[in-house]
Length: 122
Image 1 (cartoon, rainbow, N blue to C red):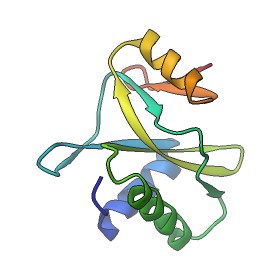
Image 2 (cartoon, one colour):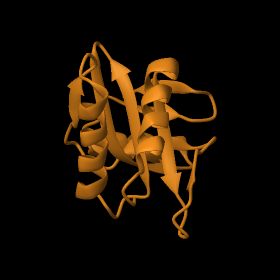
Image 3 (cartoon, rainbow, N blue to C red):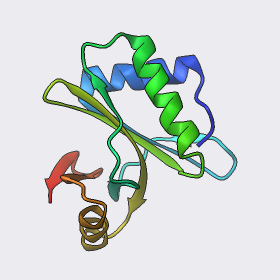
Image 4 (cartoon, one colour):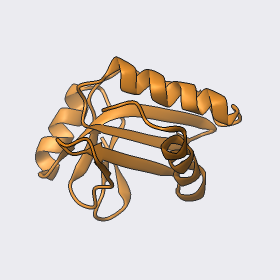
């Protein structure tokens, strides 16, 4: 995923606090879109977090750090949980069973059903 512009990061920040999270993907031409179906699964077991009380600049730094570290990833997901902001590189899998297996293999606590807008605990 390419480095996101400041307005794009601001939009993700708004989604995080207004809707509890976000998932954004990039197409081969570099344009971004919000997926509406499939299952979002983190690509790594590493957690990338900051306190939810951190200022916007800390969030922007976290997003840019994750996108730089996992540049080959096509997606980025973020969510709030228990006063913590999580940002991970993600992939979207069309099959729930495959997504659950991938999530468990990457030591995830949950995956996200994009069509239903719900978390699936693992």
